[in-house]
Amino acid sequence: MGRLFAVVVTVITLLSVSFFVMHTWWMPVDISTTGPAIDHQLEETMTGSGLLFLGGQLLLGLFVWQSSDKNPARKIKIFPGGANPLVAAAIILVGIEILTLTFVGSKAWAAVNLVPAAADSLHIDVQAEQFAFYFRYAGPDGQFGGLHPDKIDDGSGNYFGLDPANDVAARDDVVVGSLVIPVNRPILLTLHSKDVGHSFYVPELRIQQDFVPGIEIPVHFTATQTGKFEIVCTQLCGLGHYNMKAYLQVMSEADYEQWLKGQEGQ
Ligand SMILES: [Cu+2]
Image (cartoon, rainbow, N blue to C red):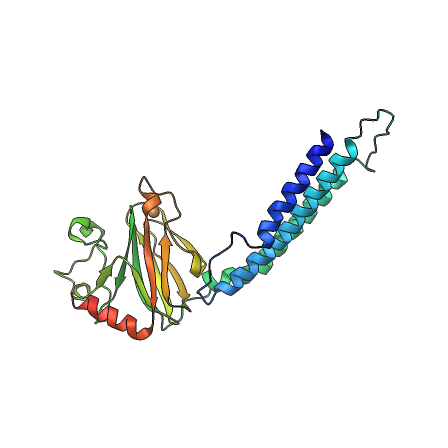
């Protein structure tokens, strides 16, 4: 029985490691300028923790195999000093591993979260609510209208709480249900939520950022490929959470300009 367990542990270990080595289930294509650093970090983290996992599981299988010998005359071997030095060594080893990953990975993190957005970024406002995303562009005047939470009214399509009657800048703001952006141009999003916590996740951009009600959260990125990608909410935000998504459409600069003109005309 013991030997069978040792074989099963070894087979499960090798099988599960092989799925990671072959990238059977892996990240989708990367379409952002900051993505390669994140993917590189992911590879390093998976390799480091994968080697520890592989070594640990194979050792476990080996020990189970060796101790399944039922011979009562066999002397029990005791590691010098007992278990304490081994446990201490394991804690130090894992601690060093995690600290190293933190320092090595901080660069990739900083490029996304600590470096400010480029000054010429295209600014788009994002409103999350149960269970949809809305996107706002400044319109021909380049000015966003002010936000008035008391004026938010889904029935009339006023998802951001604009006041076009009194606020000139708000009159030409474009509000749509898809995030349409030009390729190769820095984008700066400001995330707002009108109700509960949501999340903005685009796997292809390697960006996942929570919405927090009452806080404006900046997110910036540059898309390097045209195409249509899913934006999904990854914070359990209510009964309709499973269905909370929108699309990111990355277009050529010319297509984007044309799309925006079409929206402004409405
Ligand atoms: Cu949500």
